[in-house]
Length: 160
Ligand code: THU
Picture 1 (cartoon, rainbow, N blue to C red):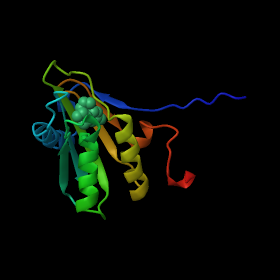
Picture 2: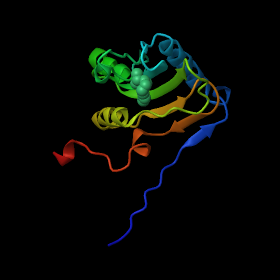
Picture 3: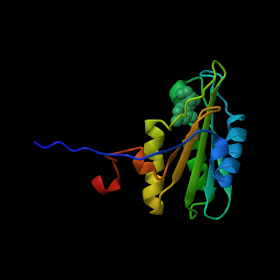
Picture 4: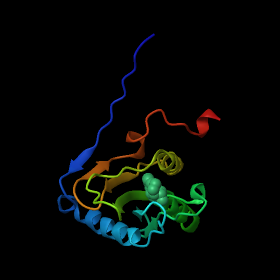
């Protein structure tokens, strides 16, 4: 038996104003998307904006359903829309923001496990990393250079 240690690296910005200008703009688009979330059940609103290599910005928000599992997270709404609309474009950057109607969300909100798996597929498909920035409603912004930092021991099509 041997032990395997996996390390991961993130960058943490104190506030959004510390991030590069293009990220500030992308996060504004994510906030706009967040305001369009349909989240009457959880009251937890998530917005995502993607910068594509064709210079388009695609955004998405969480869309809930009375049959709870039928809803979809903001991240997957956005990447599936990008995949459907611009199948040849690569996703360069992703900005994520979340805000609850029930309390102030000041901690960075990372994508859920299912969204990490979905984003991983897109990263592998396009053969280049997706920079991911995530935050709450205010406060710190976490940057990951690639989805792979967020999902060690990834399951992918090579294992099928
Ligand atoms: N949600 C997202 O949109 N993205 C995530 O990564 C975490 C969770 C949504 C799903 C649901 O509408 C609400 O947040 C509460 O889980």
